[in-house]
Length: 281
Image (cartoon, rainbow, N blue to C red; front, side):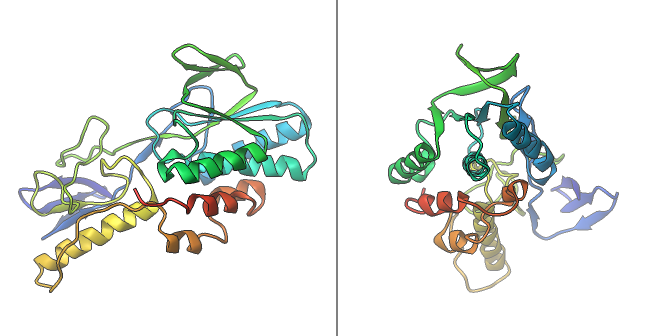
């Protein structure tokens, strides 16, 4: 792993104590996840599948009647939360479980508004069809004594809350970063203030953290380095496009690793199809 950088010497230091001389360095160390909603189950990926399954079992047994899916403030990529909510609704429907209230709580003005009004309206209709209540424009703060506390002062009765994590940068010594540890880059993904260092992916200060965007940043970096090395290419700047159509099709079979908690795929595929209506930002 990358432990530190000495830009003046063009050396990358590794976590194993080694040093690597570089002509150009591409930093793609990702971000670190942290719980952002005290009292909630934070879903970060495969390591939290067991906790989600337990909530599903509690809903099926009648121990959990009100389940909220919460997006803490500052989390820009909220699509996984919608997938989890839709898959939960499908699971309960398939098992004939009645009387469980599902709620999606998000600071967004409307569901998945980053994809545009057309997609947002379609997702809202899908959530209504599946019986998932949407509480938009709400900022979850904590879970205490069976209540989800919202800013500035509202409360919602809940039995269980599943929340997305917040991200923070690794704060690598030798590289400039903002207060949250992320690295600022220019339009060609070069680290601001450094000549031979580039960054791509979640470690950058670009607010939306998503695999497709990271790959686009990597393409920009590759072109920039190739041009410096003498290749006959004109480097293009980073122009982010959310969920390119080819990526949506490629993921259509199982668009979410979250499906493993539910025993495979499900109607969350529809959420991806709906979101394809307005994908350019």
